[in-house]
Amino acid sequence: MRPNTLYIVVPCYNEEAVLPETAKRLRAKLEALIALGQVSSRSRVMLVNDGSKDATWAIISALHRDCPLFSGVDLTRNRGHQNALLAGLMTAKARGDLVISMDADLQDDIDVVDEMVAKYHEGCDIVYGVRSSRKKDTFFKRFTAEGFYRFMNVLGANVVFNHADYRLMSKAALEGLAEFKEVNLFLRGLVPMIGYTTATVEYERGKRFAGESKYPFKKMIAFALEGITSLSTKPIRLITALGFLIFLVSVAMLVTFIAQWAMGMTVVGWASVICSVWAIGGLILLSLGVIGEYIGKIYLETKQRPRFLIREVLDTEE
Ligand code: UDP
Ligand code: MG
Image (tube, rainbow, N blue to C red; front, top):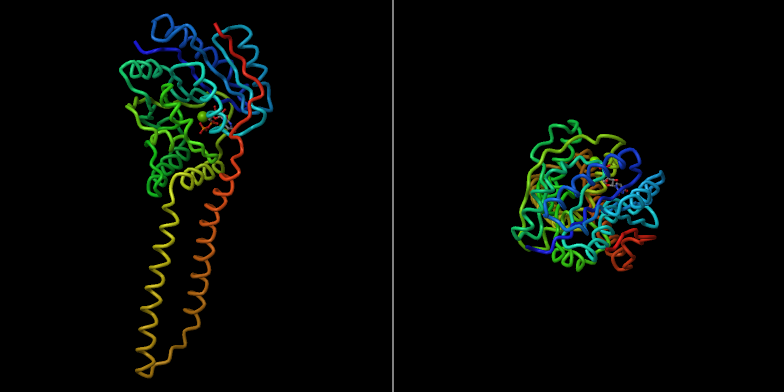
């Protein structure tokens, strides 16, 4: 049997409404797994506080005080979901043999954890949780989220369809992840690059049972752009292609105009001139924007700022 100390890593941002219930369910799940001998008794539920403004950290500290199965990581400030998750994964890597990450709102069916752990024992190093349906999401969320995966793939960011950040990773896979030093983090795009033997398990995604989504539409767009620009340079290539196409069109236009001039037809078309000026101007601005986006990324990467800072770790060592 492979070494089996499991850490369940859960990033939490202003989650006081769901945390007590989430903690109760995760504790029950972990105790059951320990009783079955699937994971060792040193396993933990690791709750990462991402600079919450509410009582989240107080709740985590109290959970840890009452039960050694809970451990906590407190970040110095809010760094966003991806960075909070990375902080948890890297802390858990040093302590456990396999790590499962999931959201605090338990939209991901936690009963799938058993299957994930079983796949780990069969020799998989990464197990992706994949949503089999989005029946319980609102139409808007489903539409935008599925559009997100399609758009990402078209633009060269290959992500596992309908897989969010619910996944199991072995220590070896986490060591691999630690080698990716980028500051602009998009974990779902990075993990498939690690390699190893992988598997997927399907589950139905439920509703957030309390509190509200921390990913409003605006943040989702920002997240998609982050994903695309940090994983692929395809948009820049598309701009090049577009520029070439427009150049071809202008050559064709030139040829036509010269022919018309030779035949003695003068064109009076002000409208077409103004239109093309605006069209080209717009395209140039757009292209500069996309290129600027990448330069901005390079700027941030060269600074090598820390991806997270930890104020405190609560973990009972046996
Ligand atoms: N989260 C976080 N930092 C943030 C925003 C969100 O750690 O700045 C966590 C949040 O607590 C939750 C997870 O990321 O555990 C996913 O957020 P949410 O459920 O609100 O997103 P949705 O399911 O609506 O996409
Ligand atoms: Mg959620």
